[in-house]
Structure formats: C-alpha cells, structure tokens
Length: 99
Image (cartoon, rainbow, N blue to C red; front, side, top):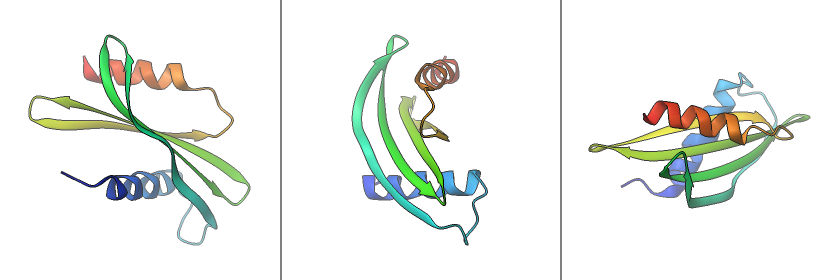
C-alpha cells in the first residue's frame, strides 16, 4: 500500500510536468485541498482527492480519482485552471474509463 503522502507528491508533481511548467517555475502550494474521500457517481464508488497549486500567476487545481479493477488500482488525474467548473466532465471521463 502506498502512503497518501507519496500519492500527493506524485499527483502534483506529475501535474506540474503535464503543464510543462519546468523546473524553473515558481510553484507554490500543492497541498491536498480535499479528500481522500469516497465519492459516488455513475453508479459506482470512487476514492477522490483534490489539490491546488500556483505557478506564477496561474492557479491550478488537480482532481485525482481512484478505483479498483480486478487486482489493480486504476486512477485518473486531471489538472485544470482553478476557476473552471469541470466536475461533470471529469466524472463523465472517469465513468467512460471504468466501463
């Protein structure tokens, strides 16, 4: 089992890389802002956590969803502008991946 601290670090650091902010970016924050918590949508249970960080003047949020499939733990990590309402899109994407 992986401790949540390691999941937190890998989730946020991967989001920084995805957004191509580079090592020179002035990244602040990155703490978990919600979760881990059990979420129910799409007829299934998920484990979800949220994160927030800033890179320069850009505020970024990250949503992590985890779910079991057979003997594996699968996940979806989405980063987006902090002021965006993307919950429905992320949930729809997660349901499509789990089906």
